[in-house]
Length: 208
Image (cartoon, rainbow, N blue to C red):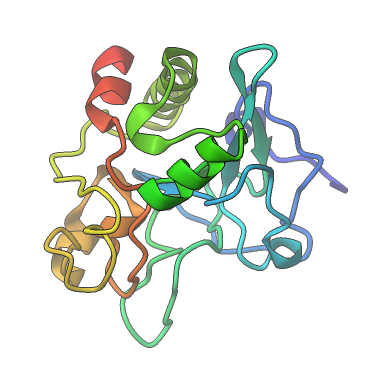
């Protein structure tokens, strides 16, 4: 970074070693919504040089039993992990910060990695230390940026969560009015189903 953003724009302790704002400046926003994703990988993605990057990525640190955080854009600048058609309603730019969690929501991928002995986070079965790390982040977004500690949405398991007609994806009007925590599976103009059956109640209840 040539000149760093304000302290309130950086999540405390997050690494900026994969910072993409210089290449993709984004739009200024006042974030009132968090969109949760799962990377469907076992390591920090390259995000095509930042062209598809979220605001932050949470990476499991297995030896320390904690999440290591990497921040890619200032909190109140638009990220790039959602399908975004500027001729329709905004997605990336509609006051949302986006978090990718390194792991999978796909039960088939989970079973394959388990069989291969590959350690990974599986969204429906996150260990307590991972939930604690997500809770700490959610609390920070509320205390520093005023993001509501609420969801009120149904979180479908993958693969039922996939597709434009998954039964839980918001309409454009609902999306414009929404504030709080949602998943990629809820965002209009998108068809991804991550993060599947994510433990949002545990994350938000503990954060309050």
